[in-house]
Length: 418
DNA sequence: TTTTGTTGTG
Image 1 (cartoon, rainbow, N blue to C red):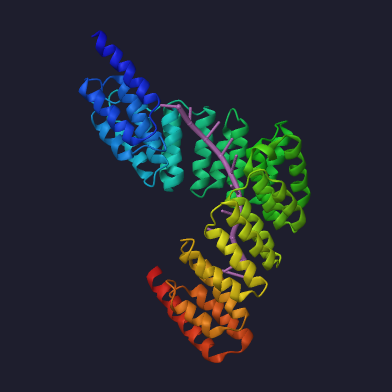
Image 2: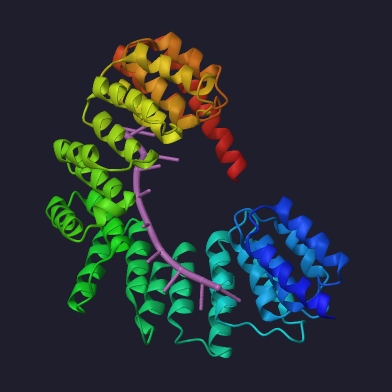
């Protein structure tokens, strides 16, 4: 018995330092051999790692869970949480439904928080309403975390009105709830509303944190609200946000670039201590939109030297920059390099940009070839781009081909939609 | 065990 107790503690210590499934399997095997795998503390920790850790494994978690004769609320929560951020969030919803047949388990605040996250990700509007009712039945209508998640789930399911209603009816709100509702408006493209809610927040005497600043700058960027953006910049500087949070710098670069203050964008970018793909992409787009193709190419080379890997958005920014400055040769070269060297598969937007770029340069034959050899030959957007280039260059032959494809693809799309 | 954030043509 003494030996067993020590072993249980030893297993728990091992689990504390576990950082991979490989190690977890070994620890699990040891626990099974010593008959400790179903001890509540051991079983709970094993399940927690598999279900919720980044290095975990959800199928292994399900296997462990199936061995419990009467799982507790915390066990259900681990699985619901794990699936809520997985590619199959609907499993969280199914688990929640099964939970009601389990005698020992009763949903708690954490259950609803994770479940609502799954509803957000799975796009389950009906389930949001159902969960909303259950939150009242189980006694959590004044839990700030649950209600913030509920509000967010409504917004992610397309109803900002319901999100706002939940927010308004919350008996207590914290800075996270405010940041969340502002983000809901921002995400829905309702930027003026987002700024209005921010004013309400200020009127209540609440301060801003890094989350508020980032989402606020995004709305400023969309509205071209430079004055507020500058105020947020100063506030961020005074509060040391810029030094410790790369997202604040990124949002500032984007805001300045979209508001037309390219020099300011560049200044913030140059002063950033750390830069990620978002930082480089925002700056690339800023240069591209304002017609600085050569500078964008230079910046892209610096990005490579810095060791940050370019992604789909980087190449789109780069191609746009080339297109806007008539750098068709350079653009084509980057377009080829993106898949051959960088293993980034171009999507329809990249092809569209190349067609546009070739079209502007009058290279209509080459643009036609590009569409024909692409996986997006059925996409009317590409043919529309080619047709407008044909209009500019008065090329009837290729114009006719484009129009034919446009009619064909539109008809096909209409058929498949009906 | 639970909540919030940035980049993508015309």
